[in-house]
Image 1: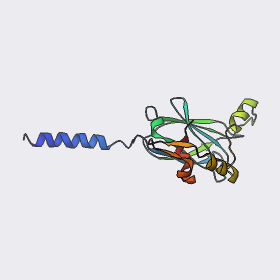
Image 2: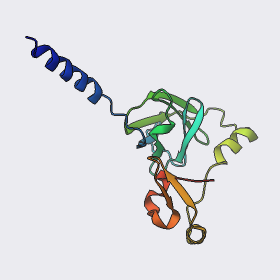
Image 3: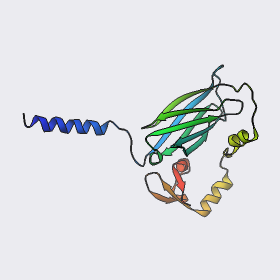
Image 4: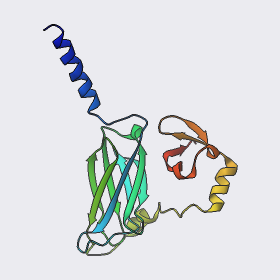
Length: 174
């Protein structure tokens, strides 16, 4: 009997720790599909913002097929909570709150804005972070400058050491 109790206690503690998927220094991915609430058409060029504790931690846009992918470092999460805000021209802005412990796949339906009126401020908010795709000139400039970047897990590398396809997992060290 004395031997069974410590074994049970050890297995309970092990089980409790294995339940959480959270890993410090891990890149989380939020991906999904944005569609029109009425006709279910895919919505391209929606602006996607991810916040944790009112702090912007990732931005992105939906592609021409309505798909989006945003990545962020798990270290930026506060209370495992995120807020995702979707903004699209001629659509009502929508905000969702989530608890997150791992990569997540979501489907978003937006309703058309019946007024379709945009103030200058809202149009600016929508267009301020649309960044053109990286051209060869921008990549060449980064390669020449060879600045330092920090990964979510703490590693530091210069631009030449990072694969271009994984650059969005690294932050430029200012």
